[in-house]
Length: 202
Length: 181
Image 1: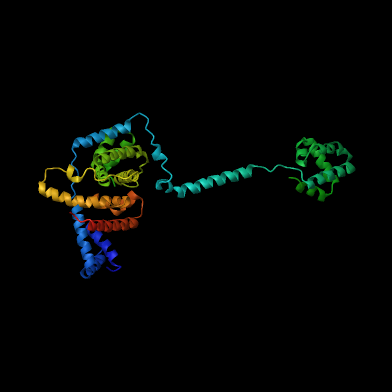
Image 2: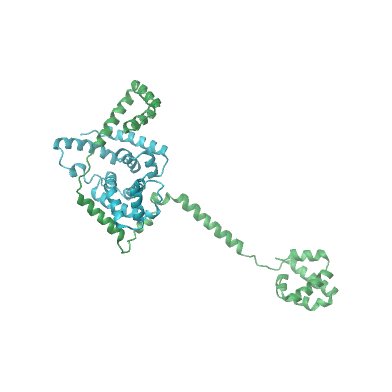
């Protein structure tokens, strides 16, 4: 048997199955069969096999058999009783191939969901604003400068000591207080100190 | 594709029309029963599985879009259901041999010889791996085209052809190794 025999065997099967072969394939097959005893024997076996398949005698079953089956189908479709749940079918043994056959979908999807949840958690969790040494120094500088240069803001700035951060301090002020304080700060504080204040917290 | 009468029956069956369901079952019950019988080689199993298949088919009928023919869709459900059944455990196989249930009307000696030979091939088919058995039965016994089998098994036509050729070659080997007594 040479390597091309496998291709010719496929043609023999299709031919005996009743599939029409393209004329080119058919001629090539005839030429090959004339020189290859293995493929001739294969063809004879296939002819015999399909003949025996065609001679198959199926079990004789009376019409009543199918009538009964039909009634059970219709009854099964219309039964109102709750269906019995076959847990073994829905949750098969994980060590059987059926479970693992869909792991290609299950595992990436589960991983993706976990990733999204983790990302959402990290994105929505704010880092608490603790005073850093730099922000404490900055607050002290603001206090000092404001007290020295703007006595009008003194009452407001004194309350800075009660707060841990500038954010918390600002949150405690109403609009009028903020306007007053910002007016004082923009007039009195050096610009470099203001920008340092913005960057120094949180 | 279906004829217009079948399309109408399917539409009616989708709405729960009992008569339409009954007519569709009548149209395909023998074909599906014998297909499943060839897969299981057991009349009782085939009967139970056929009932389950049709119940499943009509419960899922709302999802049938008509992209393939109803017959192909039916075979798809029947094949998957039977392969699942066969995968659940070792089957005893050939519990009800062909000869035991054959119609006794043809001449006795002729029928016996034919049964013996075809039973020999049937036993060989039964020994194939499940997927190969399904493909051989669908093609050689049920006469489905490669395209229909590809739709039933959810594979490409090329893969289907190759799998069928391999299955037939394997079947020949089985028959050669176990000649008819």
